[in-house]
Length: 116
Image (tube, rainbow, N blue to C red; front, side, top):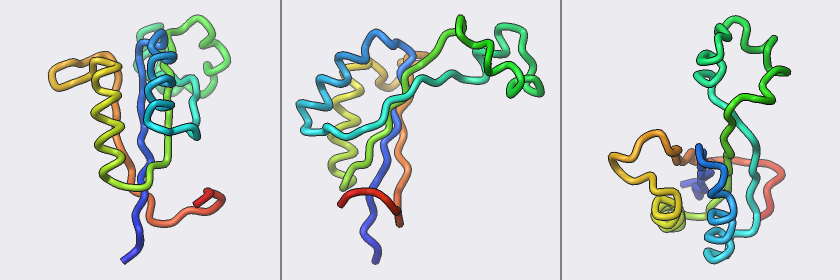
């Protein structure tokens, strides 16, 4: 059986919580992750941009609401659950709490260019 690792994605609607998330990741001994600015297609649609026009309008999103997305490779399901539990508290995105963000994992069965 192939050893499975995971990528945890954390999408934060409240970008002001980035410092808290980074601090919590450091407390969990996680120092390697990627953070990017993202936005959902619904944010564009609410500004009157149609789906067919999305690619042509990406240059005009400076004043749109954006999110922060973090993705981090984790070595085990146990670590995924531990990090998700901690992030759930930091971001207040437990069950029944919608509109604040989302977390999900993707299993990695094979990868290249990632340190072991």
